[in-house]
Amino acid sequence: MTKKTIVVTGFGPFVGHEERNASWEAVRLLPDVFHFRNDAYEIRKYEVPVTYEAVDRILPLIWDSKPDLVVHVGVHGKINTVNLEHCSYTSGYCKPDFANRCLPCDKISLCGKTADKETCTMLKTNLDVERITRELNLETNVKCCCSTEVGNYLCGYIYLKSLDVDSDRTLFVHVPPVGKPYSSEETMAAVYNVVGKCLEQLSSEKKLP
Image 1 (tube, rainbow, N blue to C red):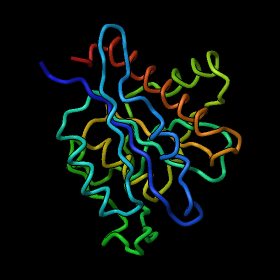
Image 2 (image 1 turned 120 degrees about the horizontal axis):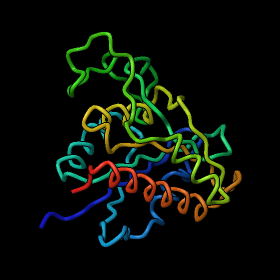
Image 3 (image 1 turned 30 degrees about the vertical axis):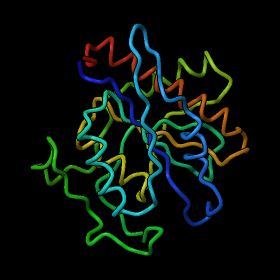
Image 4 (image 1 turned 180 degrees about the horizontal axis):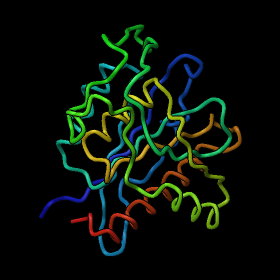
């Protein structure tokens, strides 16, 4: 029997967030098991260093395990909501990472279904982020928003790379810094609820084994 798994990643320290990264502070608090209907999903949590090399190394390990859902979480210093990102862009990656290394080219080469489309400027998740956001805002006290501004740094990079593998079961969530306004526990609960909504959609679309 194939093991049911959910992968959730957070990022490690980087400039402006050297002491702690709110994304990993929340992700590490997630339980090890997510119960959905009659199934128990193992939650595998990864703290990803803020470098392009780390993303390139870790993502194949994640996807080779054939997870049912992958949720990447990153911190955004200028928001006070939990933002669900629609998409990620293929160009504009000029900023050095936390190891002070740049990519050889600011445009990312795709390997998935859109690899032959030179004009491809973005990849979108097939998860209904508007619906997830709407439902969570009715059901929880954490304010959620839809966004198309994942950025052209490591957040955008990891999201693009995962969307290139499987846009049906990939999502990126931006969270605010710790305490601005939510505690790590509140942010973790928001991520947990996002996971549940994603599983509901995948199940309704018969995309879960």
